Length: 510
Image 1 (cartoon, rainbow, N blue to C red):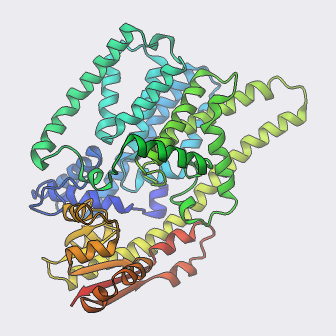
Image 2 (cartoon, rainbow, N blue to C red):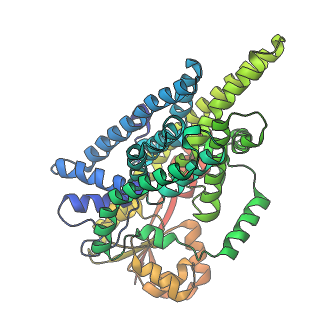
């Protein structure tokens, strides 16, 4: 909550989801555009909870909704400390390592930021940790507990079954819990738990299938790729060729994509490689191997299959087992080096390593918090929100607006949106298929929206590809430029991330 008060960060996707949540609370249906039945959100919990809060406080501002939701998410994340305590007690780690685990989760920038910025990540961390706790401590005959956990993961995110499946497979593969070995009885218990979870989740599938015509979120449809065995094999090979770890796990939002993080990046790179491949080291405990292997498979899934590897709100799912690996690594070093060595210098080196890890986590958290504070103030509130408000005051309510960054601009303009790749817009998805093109210029030319909002680089690209369209059909209406404010903020790390959305051009159809 301290992080929330300092940064007031609201991730752009919060406003994509919340527009549907608010419409539901006000009696307009669970839709992005009133009267248009498109599932423009992904997480049932992340959509229905804010709708419920808004319904209770209908006469209050939208500000109250996000603050109440932040409190709910913060309490959810905080409750995981109890799960961590029970887990550490069961595996008989000294109490110090419980506090270390809490510290690592508490100073993981992406875990904390995505708990208060409107995303559903706190619930994902909770259910993942609870599943790990169950797999370590309970027999599979406790089907109801496993079923509730599975259902919770599915309600958090539709692809939650993939993360759950990865964790379960890893724990079975490394035989972590002798009570949960995959024999006939346990297989039957697992299937029973899955069936109960499906029964709990099926009403939502039936409801959305009837309401939208499909239970698959349109966000997934818009981002989907033409998967095939050949494509996946090629993707895995290409990813393996360029693999340099997954430093995004230990850095603030988009640190690797846009740069500006100096020495933090190689340290995060080393940490990620060690944690992702720690399962290969002989003598490592079964639970540590399972968690490390699960982290690696999750990273592969995010980067190769879903393509959401760099997306900050997806990463807490992979960060959860990774932070536990770091905790168990510290315990392994404590046992094998600190307790057994006779040389003081080795003990001091091992202590220094732990202190260094703590300083790294704290420092990246601090500078990430400072970066995201200015990103919210200058870019989100000071630029993208203002674009939305300007469009609302200058556009006809029946106008259409094309943009890539849907959240703030779509919510505050309240216009019919043609976003790319089409999370709120079936028209854009259809256009991409008809044209067989992923170029903004082609989609704009096909749909002919009244308004276009483009980043400076995007505008340059569109003008280059279709100069006649931009010269003859559209005129520059407004420029929104906060680059100077970003520079004046003197952000030590992460400034390139802010500069990406510091300059926008708004075009109006002639």
